[in-house]
Image (cartoon, rainbow, N blue to C red; front, side, top):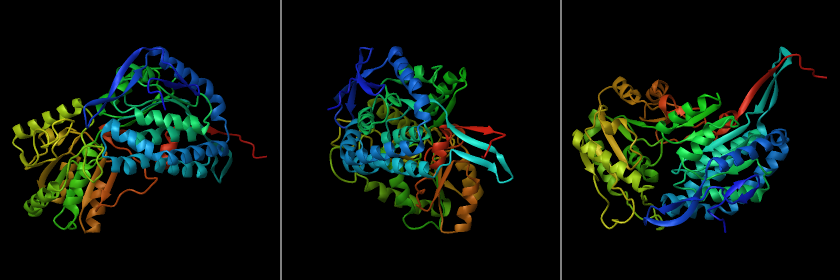
Length: 479
């Protein structure tokens, strides 16, 4: 059994130098399910020092050997996937069937994808055919601070840690203190796989403490962070003095543009996507823009689809949604629902309070607001809960204007059976990703956004390149 009060530094589970502890709360029951240690500056310094000491050796390790170790890790992860799913379900409230599939399997899927990218990646290549003595060398950037969120824990940990290891970097992981259990298991898998000491280190802590210590640390060469836009801005400021690279994957307020000629499942698909993971996804389509001629019909379809969305405890099997992750998140969501009502938006489904029979736990009623305009607070702020805003539009140009009228730019969605129109609109949407007509992005596609949704890309070759420096060498001998 993993000791939840220990950290992983220099290839060993160690007792923290700090004596501060924190309860981990099961959001379905509001009960303590584990206790973790919270690190201090001494713990952070020890982890960074271990990563720095291991960097020269690991960065020069042949790609073939890194592949052997990562494939061994993948085998271990797949063999312990159920254990991972149960931990995720308990710590952040994902229903167990979803936790065992979408949540836990995201870690193995991303690991598989990054292994494929590493196999095909050329770390040394000629500039071009005309300049055979000019070389481009891709080198590991150095020691990386990886700071991950609670909403899709293994999705984010694997995208960062596996990519960093594949690139030849060493690292310190600080997972969310709200949902740290899955990262403790991930760390144990790294140890079991025989990843060399110091390559991967893990210290639990909060953002103000260990997070700030890592992002401002002079021996950290790169920060990769996923979380709120507010926290991302603070991290960038803290990292600025040392001019380290900062890769950010932040919030979103995705528009789902539904035209009157959309397919018959477009509305229900949009509802289910918005409410998936209890609305706790940065790429959720939380603003449904509907062509006015179809708007009243769309409202009826949305109400019917939302009525089928069940809410239940995480331990129960089924296709329901679970609680939100914490009391803090619950209160934030309730406050924003109240704001929406006060702003004059019409509640079609849901509203304030908890679903009947779920008074214990951080459960939120799936909520749909109709007759929203894009100036309302609920249309501009990321709610991060099962709350959808429906906004009518008249013309294609107006839909694009509304969709782009946001500080965010992560994912937008288009629903129309006119392929030329879909392509035309996708090109004009200011976001890092666009999904059309329910077609998900393929494995290896880059994940990331524009504007205050962040910078950098995760997944595929782009996720690998984020952890690499580019060196140009002239006068290279090809003898």
